[in-house]
Image 1 (spheres, rainbow, N blue to C red):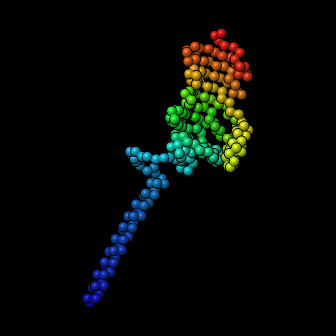
Image 2: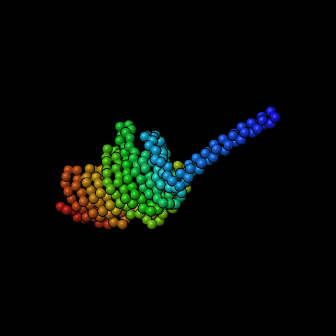
Image 3: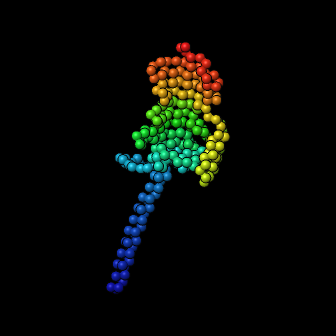
Length: 248
């Protein structure tokens, strides 16, 4: 009888332990299911991180397409068109943007330093033509004691930039420095022209200038106020030579 009572008591303890195990497991599964649903079907609550320190941030769509890169100068994206990554260093910090297909479409970049008493700097905000390079840009450059700052407009080809990327990447793989430089120059020379049609800004001679160019990139009209404050209008021929100036 005693043995039977002990057996029933042991069985009750085992059943209680089993119920406890099933309850805890059910709660855990419910928590995991809720968390998985929130990740897949709902946006997670925004978190205030206060301050973070990073070298690079990649922003992607839900399908993984790269849309924006925020980076320092050591890890900046080199650029990509039609899935072809440009084989080059890009030592500038800033933000690079990408379109729905993952092609680079422009960005905001900065560089600048003083070395051996020489100041050099460059910054720009550019907007690229689809499948091509920049077609609108706001740029500032400084070097050799001269500065310029302007809005510029380029006329780009309909040919995709990926054709040039193939040639440049192949040229950059050449081991001999002289042969590599020649191959790069040849690839760039064979690329479709990209004439600058509009320049509006301050030139290196401290003049305020509006220059309008023809389809070949040859300046045909200049509106200038020089560093001394003297205004003039220049009309140019198809060789870029001034044919008339107002006032005379």
